[in-house]
Image (tube, rainbow, N blue to C red; front, top):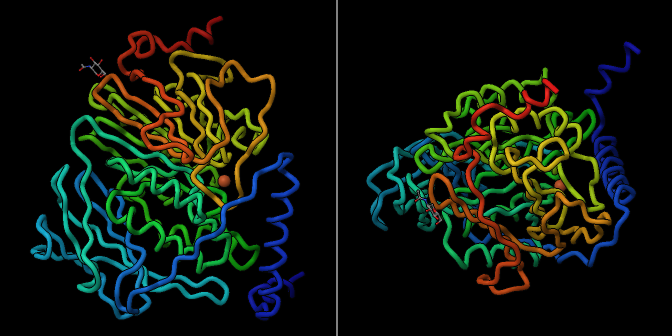
Length: 448
Ligand SMILES: *[C@@H]1O[C@H](CO)[C@@H](O)[C@H](O)[C@H]1NC(C)=O
Ligand SMILES: [Fe+2]
């Protein structure tokens, strides 16, 4: 046995490659056997080529980083390219120049380009900025979110890079919004690293204009036994989110504020530890405790594997996380929980512990962004009375927060014109409910 350990670290490359393929087959076969439903033909993968020079930025995307800063991320093939962003509120003149950091990674025989992360600001709210990355390449622009209501979110899960993805993104772009929220499963690279680059190029026109706030799905894991036991190598390197800014120790869960602190959004990790002794659980507890619902009337949560799901696909996969964390979210009166993973749309009523509860969050599954695996067509029958609307079509959601008390949720199918709303509902903030903000109903339950 003593001889075995050192050898693990001296694997010849042929064995590494062999392990890579074996684990690919294992991943694919567990997938196939776990799914007792039929899906329509998946969309074709679109491979987005690199059309700029080696020193020019590609895969530009932005994310919120603290109350008045934005993180600009991009990749260059040239490792000498500078990690600087120049910007201003008028096109073509860049009076502010900020230097940031850079990183890169390797994955089997793949070596990434130079991945740049530059945090810029302070920035004014609801303002358009023009910017250039590494003093080279095209000019980009973004608009910062407003510091007041109304504010609108586009919500898209399980995006991928297929014909369906393209259709979804066209629908998203056909009407303005402020922040893009993605509850996991981005590129579906599934260890083929060039597909991460292709995905970055596909989404650049959209992700360079509005902040993309994402959390991880199972397709981000990319664990390989022995070689990459921790997983998330590409995801954490390329899609750096403001976890340090929110007191989290991991890029796999974090939170941020929008609308001048009136909305608190928590991104949880379905594929990292969540039990009551885990770092994620403790962080969540502290993060929720800091919220003052008088200052922050809205609290949203995003995670990947749904806690409530009446689709045949992925039944029970979110159950252990629900058991561990549902009480925390319920106690904090979280307004809405978005999940992905199931390639369909479903909206539930307010729930706590498998029962309708007017102080619980509304649960929405929106895993229908356009991934290469197709739709999840089969549902459990008869329909649960908790499930208000369910349909397996590609699409995206819009969450428009009007003021401290009211928001409007709508789901838009790709098959329809964007003005057609397939499902919609008005929701009132739980912070405005005397019943829910007073005596917690769970303590009543304890007494009975
Ligand atoms: C909030 O918006 C809703 C929907 O537009 C409206 O009915 C309500 O009166 C608004 N409340 C306040 C305080 O403005
Ligand atoms: Fe998934």
